[in-house]
Amino acid sequence: MFNDVLLWILILPGMLLGGWAQSRVKSSYARFSRVPLDAGLTGAEVARHILDRRGLQAVRVERVKGVLSDHYDPRGKVLRLSEGVYDARSIAAAGIAAHEAGHAIQDADDYAPMEFRTAIVPVVKAGSSAGPLVFFGGLMLGSSLVMWLGAVLFGASAMFALITLPVEFDASKRALKLLEETGIIHSENEMAGTRHVLTSAAWTYVAAAVSAIGSWAMYLLASRRR
Image (cartoon, rainbow, N blue to C red; front, side, top):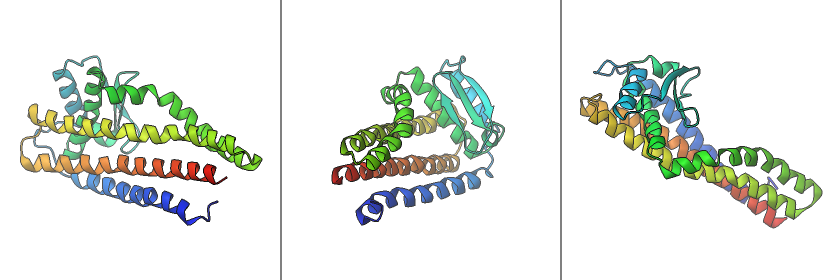
C-alpha cells in the first residue's frame, strides 16, 4: 500500500509544509523575542491587561513549562503562558499573550467555531487513537468494512484541524486589534513585528490541516481500493 505514488502525494505536502512552518515560527519567535516592547510589559501583564479590560478577571493567567506551549483552557478558564512568554518583555511575548487572550474572549463571546472545537475534543481523541488501530486491524483481517470504519474514525482529526483554522485566525485578528486598542503597541514597527509572529504561527495550523486531510484521504483511498 505504501509503495503507491498517489498515497505519498497525499502525505508529502503536509510533511513538507509542516517542516517549513515549524522552521518559520521558530525563526520568527527567536527574532522578535530579542525586540523589546516599548510599553515594557511582560507577556503575563499583557494578557492580564487585555482580560481585565474585557471584564474577564475570573480567567487566571499561569506559567507553564515548555517552549511555545502557550494555550487557553476553556474548561478551566485558565490562560497558560510558556516561561519564555510569561516573563518576557518582547514583541513576540506580547503577540503570543494577546493571541491566547483572544481565545479567552472567544470563549466569553460564545464564538461558535471555538465552542464546536471544544465539544468535539473527546471524539477527536478517541478517533485519532482508535482509527489507525481499527484500520490496520481491518487490513490484516481483509475486511474493507472494518477499514472504512477506521478511516471514518480517523476523519475526526481532519475535522478538528479544519475547525481549528478559523478559531486561530480569529484569535490572531482579535490580538492585533486588542494590542492597538489598549495602547500596548505604540508604533507601526511593533505592529508589523507582532503580525509577523502571529502569521508565522498561523502557518503551523495550515500545515496541520493539510497533513490531516492528506492522511485521511490516504486512509479513504486505501479502503476504497481494498
